[in-house]
Length: 212
Image (cartoon, rainbow, N blue to C red; front, side, top):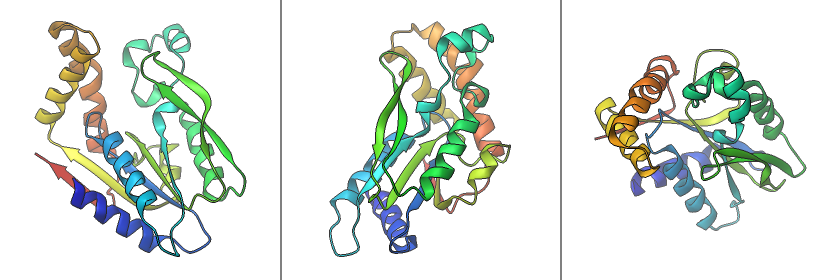
């Protein structure tokens, strides 16, 4: 992974115009490793020095999950994580503003322990030159996600095979306290359909990273 992180950082720095802000989109299906990879990219960018260096920040899409109470009232709680369970328009509008923001901006962060979004928990200072955005649906061709295409100066797509995703997803739910039967049900009824949607309906990224 270290080589891929370095390559993405080099591309991001080369594509950023001095004085402007670059948005990097890191997308992929659930359990593809987006979060870990995006965190590594931001960490590496912030370790780099030199006269052209500027701070980098991370913005996960997960902060725009709709609240569980609202999902329950709409019969969507079992589908949490699917495109319709996010404030997709709010997320896209926020990125539009972020691209040219010259003041401090605030965004929600998803708290996995409490299974809810915490408002204004992420701050992006005006001197941040590169914002790495990560999420499943950043490259979807459908509206409103398609509005993001012109915002990203660099896009990366992580694409493990479905068998790898199935194993990772089931292990994730077992780690979160589900038994094997419940974990398998959650994976087959929600997570894998979401993964298949991302793989089939995302537009091509600038850089495709496949994994065994």
